[in-house]
Image (cartoon, rainbow, N blue to C red; front, side, top):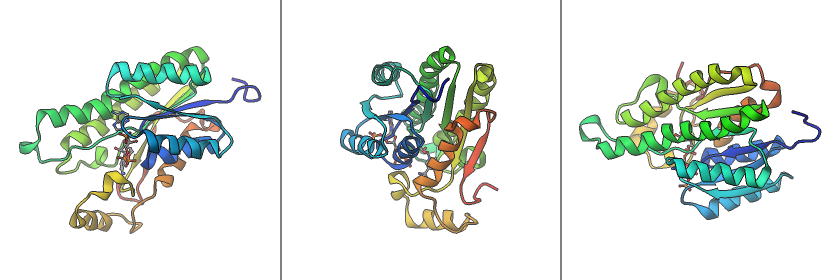
Length: 249
Ligand code: NAP
C-alpha cells in the first residue's frame, strides 16, 4: 500500500461511546478515515464522528447490529461505499448480562456470545475478504482480563472474551502471509458506562486488585489499539496486550 496516495479506512464496532469512541478518535489522530458503528445510540455515534472530523479526517456513523450476519454486511457495505476500502477493523462492540451460573438464562448466555464473539467473527470475515485483496490489514479484538482470570458472575462474558483470544491467534496464523495482523487488547477496569453500574463493594474489591491503584481511562485502551493499528506494527501479530494497571499479573 502506498501511504502517500491512500488514506487508510478504519471500522470500529460500538464506536458511539466508551472505549470505542476513544479508539475512533485515536485512529483519526493516526490519519484514518473512520466508520463509527453503533447499535442503538445514533446521537452519540454522530458526536464521535464529529470528534474524528475535528482531527482532519472523514468519518461516518453507521447503524448495524454486529451480532447478525445482515448487520455486519450492512456495516462493511457502508464502509466500502464511504471510503472504498477497509484497512483497520476494531472489534470493540460488547455487552454484559451478568449472573451466577445457576441463575444465568440460556438467552443471556446466547446474547453475550452473539454480540461479543460471533459479532467479531462475522466482522473479521467481512473485513478479511477485503484486506486479503488489498494485501494489507490490521484487526484488533477487544478481549478482557476476565478472559485470562475468569470472574464469578460473568461466565458468559468471560467465555466470550476468552473465545476472542482463540479467534485472534487462529486468524493471526491464517492471515499473517497476507500482510494482515490480528491482535487483542485485554482491558482491566476502565471507566465507562459498562462499569459505571457496578455495585460500590465490587468496584472497591476490583480496585484493591489493581497494582496501579486506579481504574483506567478509555484513552489508555485506545492507545494500545492504535499501536496495533499503526503501519509500523506490521511484524506484531497474535498478541494479547493487557491494559489493566497490572491487574492480570
Ligand atoms: P460500553 O460503554 O457499554 O459501550 C458498548 C458499545 O458497544 C456501545 O457503543 C454500543 O452501541 C456497542 N454495541 C453493543 N452491542 C452492539 C451490537 N450488537 N452491535 C453494534 N454495537 C454494539 O462498553 P465499553 O466499556 O466501552 O467496552 C468496550 C469494549 O471493551 C467491550 O467489548 C467490552 O467488553 C470491553 N471491555 C471493557 C472493559 C471496561 O472496564 N469498560 C474491560 C474489559 C473489556 P450502542 O450504545 O449504540 O448500543
